[in-house]
Length: 130
Image (tube, rainbow, N blue to C red; front, side, top):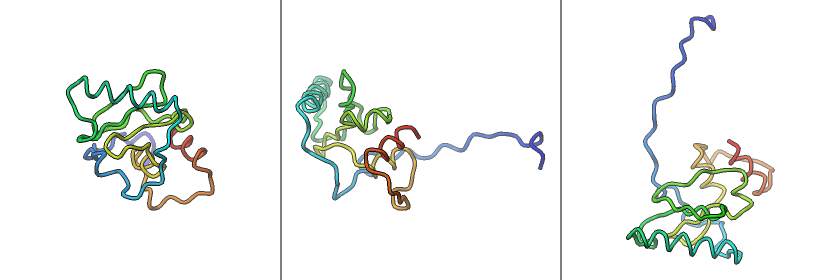
């Protein structure tokens, strides 16, 4: 097959995965947040309540690494390399930040097959650059 006869086609869309289906049962993520990250989390939770939702009943992901916390219902805000260093995303119903495996899954990787000698910080940066 020559390159000229090949017709590019986008892949077929996949079914969206709910955050509830993606979160780990026994997480390695931290529930201990810095004062700055905690203030972002509290502001994000307040925004959710202002919209009439209960963040403890429905899964919300709050971008606590940005200057203004950005909550999204049942999906992660943009995964970036910088987010791994600045607190990342807080998951409302489980009261913690995302794990490396959850970030891998959010970017479409099979976390079970992933092996690396990279630190979590470096791997998180690489995931954000994916």
